Each structure stands twice: as C-alpha cells, then as structure tokens.
Image (cartoon, rainbow, N blue to C red; front, side, top):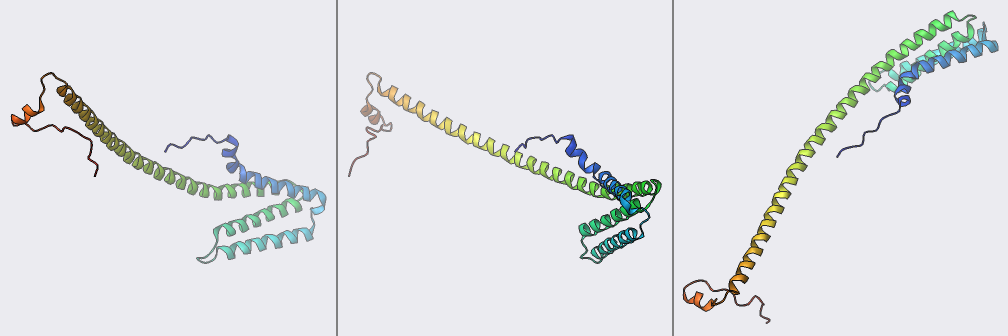
Length: 202
C-alpha cells in the first residue's frame, strides 16, 4: 500500500530546466566555431542555412496544420528551424553582438515554450497524485473494515470454542461426583445424558 519515497538527485531535477539554455548555447558555440573555420561572410554557407531553416519551418507549419497535426513533430521542426537560423547568423556574422542577441532571444523563446509544457506536466502529475491518494484512502478504509470483521469472527469462534470446552469440563466434573446417578436424573424427569459418543458400525 505504502510506496517507498525515492529522493531524486538534484542533477535529475535540474537537467530539464537547463535543457533550453544548453541547447541554444551549443548552437551558438558551434556557429562561432564554424565562423572561425571559414563561414564568415560566406554567401554560399549563409544561403544553405537559409534554405535549411526555411525548410524546417515549412515542415513545422505543415505538421501543425489541420486537426490531425502532430504537436511533437511541429515543435521539433520549428526548434530545428530556429537553431539553424541562429547557427547561420553566428557563422556568418563577424562580431559577437548579433549572435548573442539572437542567442538571448532564442533562449527566452525556448524557455517560454518549455514553461507551458512544464505547467501542463505539473498539473497532470498533481492530478495523478491526488487520484492515487484518493484510491489509497478508499482501499485503506475497505481493508480496515474487513480487518475488523475478520477480528469479530475470530472472537466469536474463540468464544464458542471456550464455551464448548467449559461445558465439556462441567459434564465430566459432574459425572465424577460421588453418588451421581444418570438413571435418577431420568426418573426425576430430567433429560438423559448420552451414554456413549462412539458411533455404531453398520
């Protein structure tokens, strides 16, 4: 009934909160490494990143269109589009101002989107915990009632066994008294005592 309480490590608790900034920082760092290796002011590389970012954005738009749209695929496609755009700017620009500005905007946007999912997940977790606690309380009440009922039945059976033992002891004690005559009791109109408890064989 009672589940063990498992304390999660602080890294496991902090990892989801740090994921957006880690992702955008990784894209910025890779973009600057690409910049240092010849992508600065390269029109071909910039055009490639524009095409890739536009394609990812278009894929996200198609995935989210209609009632049958997949939110996970759409979110992944839009995130890829934003990452490609930041990487393209970080690789093409010759300074840090514009890449850092886009990094801040991308990080803030990522946290804004993630916060919505975190709130939804938190509400679902709280609702599940409440439902589980209600079920535990209900089943605990039923178990307590059944335990009381079983205890009462055991006490009744124990009382019956004790009464039968006391009755048998009284009969044996009366039969062992001097001058006890079962025939005299029968003559006096009292019920006769059984003379034997051994069943007859047929």
